[in-house]
Image (spheres, protein in one colour):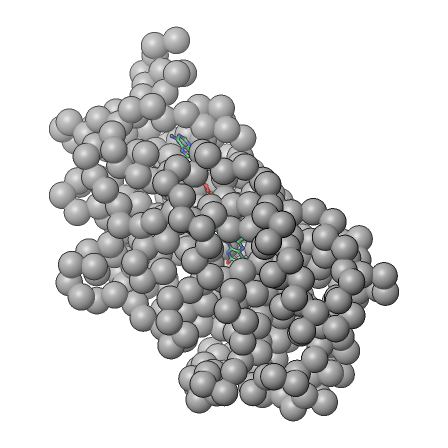
Length: 392
Ligand SMILES: Cc1cc2nc3c(=O)[nH]c(=O)nc-3n(C[C@H](O)[C@H](O)[C@H](O)COP(=O)(O)OP(=O)(O)OC[C@H]3O[C@@H](n4cnc5c(N)ncnc54)[C@H](O)[C@@H]3O)c2cc1C
């Protein structure tokens, strides 16, 4: 097939960001939005996500987006439409002595944003989560608003609403070429060409594959992250809070899962890889053993936990671990939303909304100019108090 389809705006990528941006474009007035996804909807990093929706960030812009996005996640049916499996659990964050002052500062900042984070004593925290051990912990923070969602339901809900508002979504449509001659941009696929004056790249770790087509290198590295699920003999309550443990070198987090299981991920850099297409879901034995030791220290009931499953996913990590969102300098009508560094799920509703508003010439409701990729040449990089990592 060698047809040419024209559109007002083309979004490349049908993950969380592609579908969220398409919905927000259509909702804010774009009449002819086309999404091109090489596989099925939600088949990239979003499908591997633990989808924890927390607001603890020391970088204020991230906290602002996380808080505003949490309002959308937790009222999704009313605001966007659809059931995304929202489950509110609350969040316990554990820190070492060196993080005490910075963490308390973040709690106060969260309070200003309407999040009810407070410092708990070990005995108070034990009432909230009876399996935790606090013997080597200096700070315990707790909020009741954090939760998690189902990634597939979230992407398909955004896509469904985007379609209802007039967008067209082509799955199984890989972009194989991008030409930027003149005002119209041409996107090549095996299903024919698509042309539009505006193209948005929402392809996560694959952004540099598209970048190569136009001679642009986006500033991020790709790494491999492992998630495992653990099960113990006694019941693990699905309503116990999500835990983030900043005392561990891997900055582990854990989240209740169905079937009495607990899902454990890490907030460290992970293993560098060059090509996200080389990822398999194989999890390393050494990783399971290392996480097992950290878990047994934090939750002694997990000393003999069974590892029931595991998978891997790619993080796209800019030098400061923060998003790359906005216009691509020197290429009028080309925009990017990438570099979410393993913490982009919780930020998507308002970053997607803001980028759509920017593209349509409107003022973003929640500012995104701090995520412009030029920050690496202007020295305005985003630095959090915990150093580099997915909690910044
Ligand atoms: C293991 C793991 C755990 C995570 N846990 C959390 C968490 O608990 N909380 C949180 O906030 N964040 C988390 N994240 C991060 C979050 O899930 C991501 O930031 C977010 O899902 C990224 O969405 P995306 O749309 O940018 O990328 P993707 O979901 O990767 O979407 C990109 C899409 O582009 C498509 N594509 C690629 N190349 C082409 C092409 N040539 N043509 C057409 N389509 C193409 C891909 O198929 C894919 O569907 C986690 C990430 C991982 C990997």
